[in-house]
Length: 148
Image 1 (cartoon, rainbow, N blue to C red):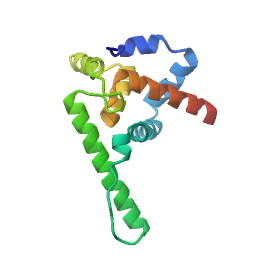
Image 2: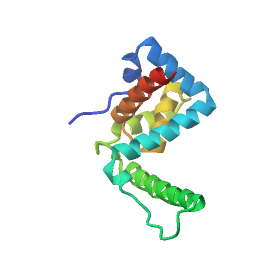
Image 3: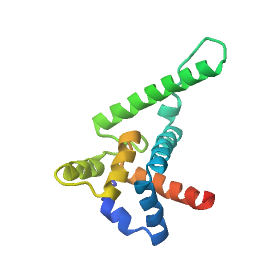
């Protein structure tokens, strides 16, 4: 069985450019919010179970109805993520959340490090384990580098 790496170990494996992008994500509230929505969307796309949560609506296609449908799908997906988090299993890879839970519990006893806060925020939005969060972060960094 593969266990989660600690957050600290994950950061030790990063290069300066990756770390500077992550530092920007942590410090800029606007970017952080976009980033967390990206984490949620990435998780939905990576999980058949989440992407298959469709809410049927039998009314004509107006923008208001589309928004309502999206909100209901998002609510259903967030509910599913919440159930996985409560059961201690990663939404994506179905491995135990032991590493991230240990980090969350450890940090509740002291002040949060900003980097840990980034991981924990993504976990709360997505229900991912440390390894899957790391995979998402590396993809986000790559996209951030190519866009920016």
